[in-house]
Image (cartoon, rainbow, N blue to C red):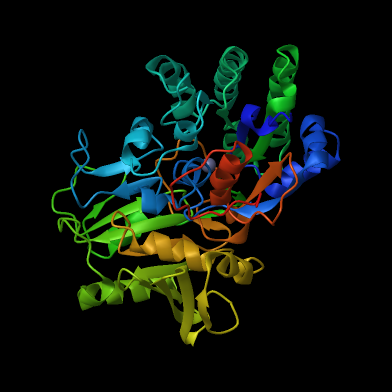
Length: 479
Ligand SMILES: [Zn+2]
């Protein structure tokens, strides 16, 4: 009689928040992350794409739900709710950079279970999204928030790392007791250090050593308990990082255009003309006439806004504008490279995407593309300046909670110049390659090349032999 070892399998998913794939690879090659390097020997390592916007919060949705965040109700780090459904938010404006972080679990759709709901018992620590964890959401209680908040809001990075180490220690104690089938441990100090000192800096390397140490301790705990054989550890990230030297104050610029602007932290604005929601700071949503309770498609907006977009696109900080033309069509504009449309088609065999240059080739894809499935749409964009651009722009631009216009910043720029707790030299949020690529380390051989962080959930369910009803945006790399 053979013993089915898949029944016993457990997965620890570690999030190295804001770690670039090249930086993690260097750390493994240089012997600074020996535990991770040993896991790589058994499986594989490489870059995959995150979701757009490439920012903490929304970018946790793909590896916890297998879906694009905007489809699950989380279009950005900051977003505006035309539907007026946000309780305790008079301005109907979310910012997960502040205490709204408490609302993430409630803001995402309940229609799709999380990995922590599919695979139980489950446990999480410091994860932006942790719905369904049966044995603790460490770092999310009021006590942890009070410990973390002074460091977070004053930009005290060593204080933050200290809180995070305590949360990791609490996670590991619970991990040994519960032996969770699925667990998620996020380590966010690399992102904070990268913003302040740069993505290649020594503090980021030190924070990667924290990630390696946490994985080593988890494995040691499982070894002592006699369940190391059943423990799998995968490591990924939520967004990349790219140096930034110039900060465009879009808020002030819109005001200089004579508009009343609703933007964080100035939320007490009567009858705003536009809501500006920036975040990660290299992207923004623009909502015109925010008093209207449902979004309209661009063709029905007034010519006033079209003239504004022309001036916006002339700004050196602006790389791409994406304008929702209908539920299926998004128009993409670049100042020099021109205009194209991305269209989504629902077919009997699944969703397909087409790219139609109207005048020029803003996404740099070489010409028109027709009816590509999700895998092919990823492949044809993977070497471009905007990896996975077709699928990402398509889902984000059509979501009910998204802005009428999406803005992605030029390399070296971001879009918020005031009200930041820590002066920063590195940024993310844009559709650009350095900000969209994240590492993926798996400790089992892959059957096909992992493409997106959304592939992680269906793959994890395969690893754990769990059957799911969900139609995932991602696809398992284990079959
Ligand atoms: Zn960040």
